Structure formats: structure tokens, C-alpha cells
Length: 361
Image (cartoon, rainbow, N blue to C red; front, side):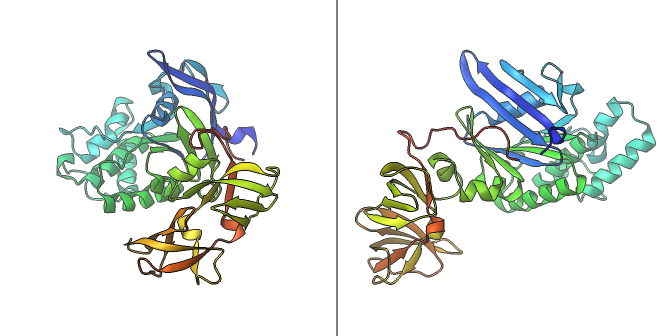
């Protein structure tokens, strides 16, 4: 990927608040027309990163570049970005169209141009005919659309979204996830999205940036983050996982839960301690006579599209997802194909080690 395709670069960004470091030497780039999500638990530094890009915070160390130009000290109103927060901060005394037009009026855009751009935004966010309505008369989802339209009407090159769906109910949140992604693709602008919800990140993003304790743990496509987590924290945070201590016997053979399993990983050395990740949906329940290992079904929960079963093998209790229910206390065999066993370097704290920083070409 050529450098000119980088819209935003964060180079060595650190941030201290009252002597506490909340961001530690962050390196990250964001491409033009990309949907990037910063994902992590509360306090990991994702919102601070977004606010530094927006210009609401200034880094203690490092530089922010926009199309290769240093904007570290440029104030927010001079940056080609707009921000949407979880609290939409709509003006209750203005109707929908006046809320959307507010920034254009401040910029003294001609009246005809304001009307054209506001009408286009109402169409884009599926609020045709709502222009004269009071914002207080709108649902939460409709208010969110007005906030998006107000941000987009100024034609920013980057839209920053800080947990904008957090106040919506589950059904509406899922609908808005798809709507936001479709909107971003139609507009062809860059979205930088902040969330602690891994489902949102996997659903909408081109690139996911997983953060913890002020550092970047992994960057990649949703599929790569899910299928090839860089460490145990990422594996645990992105979806459900069985995370186990193991030992690499040799290339393509790993020992865990008391047995040797063929795998596809190599390069760890012989008899090397490793962390092993197996997703619950990647464990097949088979006959006790043909399983690689055998166990007893301890519990069964119906989760809507599958059953979640805890299966005790003596050495390990595995979480297994299957569309076929096995009775509690029954004996079953478990089989795991080599491709579904993910090997990672073992650490003293398997949930703490940072991985690759920067972007993924």
C-alpha cells in the first residue's frame, strides 16, 4: 500500500493524564475510504485516541499527520473531521432540518446550497419528510440519524464515531450497524468508530484495532482477528474461546489437555510452552469410540441457534457449541481438526502481551 493512501497517521502517540499514561507509543495508520474500529474494554485508550485525532486532546508525545501534513497542534475546527458522540447533543429548540443546517449557517453557506445539502442528507439517512419535525418527537434511532446527517452535511473527509449506538436498544442497534456500514460505502469517506462491542466491530469494519491498557494488541480484518488472534486477550475479547496452556512437541504437533493434537503451526521450537485457542464452534462432537478425546456433558444451555455444552474430559472442561444437543451426563467424543487449533507464544500473563502495531497492508 503506497503512503499516499494513508489519510491519517499516528506516529509514536502517548498521552498522560495527571501523571498516568493512558496511551503508550501508539503507531497506527488509517486509509482513505476505510471503516476502522477501535475496539477494547473501558479505559483501554480508544476514546482518547479518537479525541486526539479530532483535536479535542493533544498528545504528550508523538505526531498526528493528515495526508502527510502534521496537524498535531491544529485546533478541531480546522481539521477535516467531524465527531458523533453517544450523546447526540441535538438542539431541542431547532427542528430536524435546522439541526442539520446549523454548521452550514455558521459557515455562511448560501441558502439554496444549504437546502440542497440538507435535503440530500435527509434522503441519505432515510428521514425524507421529517425536516419540520421537532427532534424531541423522534425515536432514539431517528435522533441518531439526525446527528449523523448534521456531521456529514459539512462534507468531512473523516467521520469519527464514539460509541454512537450505545443508547439504542438491541434490535435497533443491529439495524443501525448495517445502516452505518451501507452509508459509509455509499459516501466513500473514512469512518473511525469506537466501541467495546465486538459484534459491532466484526459486523461493520474493514479493519479492527484491538486495544488494551493504552497499547495496540492487534490490527487486522475482522476475519483475521477472529480466526488468528495474536494473544489470549484478543482471543478472549473477540468472541468465545477455550484458552489452554499447552506444549509444542514439534512443528505441527501440540500437546494440551493430556493429548497430542496435529496442528498447522510451526516455528515455535520443540517442547516449547505455548497458549492454545480453540473456538467452541470448532470442536466437533463425535462418537466416544472415534473422538480424539472423550468427556462427560456437564451442562447444556439452548442459545437460540445452537446449544452450548460444557464437556469435562478430566484434564479440561471444554465449552462446545453445536446444533445437536447431547444429554447432560452423557459420554461423548471430541474431535478438533488441525486448522482449528490456534497456537500462540506463551506468556506469564497470556492476556497482557502487545502484538503488532501499525497497520495491515
